Image 1 (cartoon, helix red, strand yellow):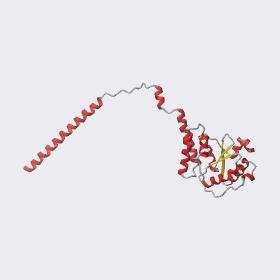
Image 2 (tube, one colour):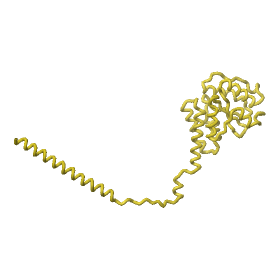
Image 3 (cartoon, helix red, strand yellow):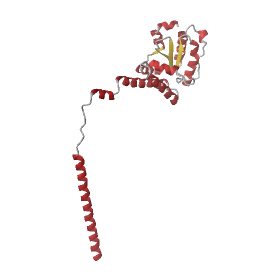
Image 4 (cartoon, helix red, strand yellow):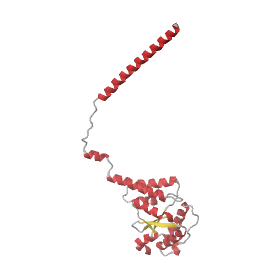
Length: 233
């Protein structure tokens, strides 16, 4: 009996100690919270000059540039979709970097064509040629068809077989259509040709993506209809 009484006394003592400790902690936390709730809050200055607020916001030109960069990248991802991922991303970065220096989307695209960091043999996607250089068509078409995994080649001596670049391009367009491919041309506002090859089923998508990127892309018939002077070149 004596041992049981001692055990009960010890149990009650520990209970009272625990209750005391809990009560102390509750009082301490209450004081701590009350102090933070009653602390003075520093007022917020709402009288900020408008010019300072405007300075923190992106300008209209910056917003437009970012939008155009994105749209041009969207178009280039489409145009380079048959390339490996690394090469496609590299060409997109070239255009994005150049667009910061040019107001015109086609000027940025031209750097993808002409710059030393632009498209490379074995990864050709856009045909480029001067109006007099119809001999340059065959090898570029072969390069582009290679990226599509098409082994068949368009083999012609353009200098001897055709009287003009436009005549050679018409023959190419007719040949591609038999393969369910289409020849599309960018408006360059010069005598310089810039063209791409897409699957016939993707013509509408290509035109819309180009339009969104502020590029003008025609199918073959539209292009020469809008540029009748080229039919003689």
